[in-house]
Amino acid sequence: MPTDIQYKDQLRKELIILERWLELLTKNDTDELKKELQAQIDRIEASLQD
Image 1 (cartoon, rainbow, N blue to C red):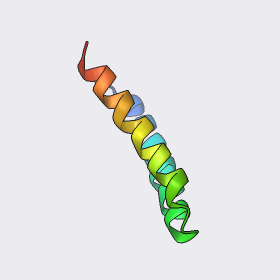
Image 2 (cartoon, helix red, strand yellow):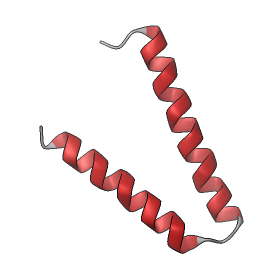
Image 3 (spheres, rainbow, N blue to C red):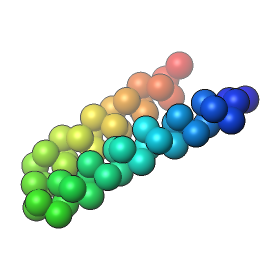
Image 4 (cartoon, rainbow, N blue to C red):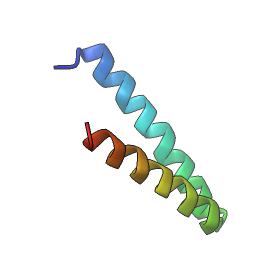
């Protein structure tokens, strides 16, 4: 079970990622957004293999 500090740190990381994706959407940079989304999908899938 993560501690409160670990949980908040994870939320901050997620916020940074979401802000980045929103920025890419705003700039209409769909190629870069697709690349970043795929990297996140790959990271999650790899984590689920453990």
